[in-house]
Length: 424
Image (cartoon, rainbow, N blue to C red; front, side, top):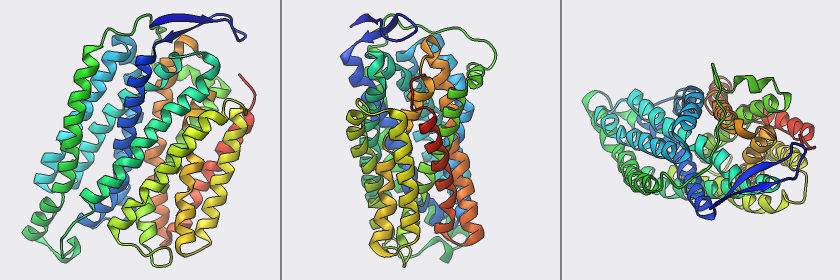
């Protein structure tokens, strides 16, 4: 491992860290927090049935999960600046473990609010890990390949988001119960909820065990990263960066992108179960979530190559328009065509987050941790947009009409791509 310099660019010398072994570590982090985040798409229909929720209430799962980004984003950046990237990763992993363990009392008490609390704590750890991972992957290589490198790392995020929902559907949605929650009441209902939620508990206990192993390994290498630099900041760290038009516009687009992506992913199971779409059973629909996130995985591997030769801004604008067209096609057709065109939006989503992130954060230099903290606050869009989408679905009685909101989000993202088509 060594500190290298590159003289390309308009701002003179830029340092980066040549450490291939750390790149593998960061890829692992992307895999972990990607998989855990995508599991929400599986437990939403499960909790919706167990607690007889409407769409707005069910979307509180995403609201509580992604609210952690607003609450923890800036403090997480401060923590990383104080203790360093590697120790910060350990802190995040341990917090994630605590969130997983909270599913035990949530199940035993059969209380929806406790499940939401567990998800918030789990997400708090994810935020800290993500604040570490995004700027760290930017440092681990030459500045001119940062778009491609972060997109490649995000591909490992997508491996997690593809694998976790598939097996999560088998474990969590594979219930053998012959009754549903709306047929029970009182003690019988509580007993049913406790029994049926055990599948959720078992899944997250397995994740907690894996996180303990990873945290232990990372702790052994807590002093491996030499030469990392962080610029001190006062007040609410990084908020002044929003005055930079490019960064502010990019942060808004992260808010909208995550909101749109999560809204669609959260409703896939219920959308595919509709008789005029594919009429699938819950578990079968849950397994197809893997196609949505798998499309993002494939697209990120392809995108990491395309972004080396095509303007990132233009690519971003093109895929955002593609997402809008697929949404329109899905909501105006029926059957398998409708279902698979919705799932294909994952391919359009593939390069959006890493490209928006790197376009917004160009030239931040030693303020990269501050920028990452603000970007992670912007991920709060994953709390707001899905909740609003659920409210639209409840008000109109139509999931198709609710998808108008994600389509509007993609329209703004297309505008940012065109705006940022030239280097900062």
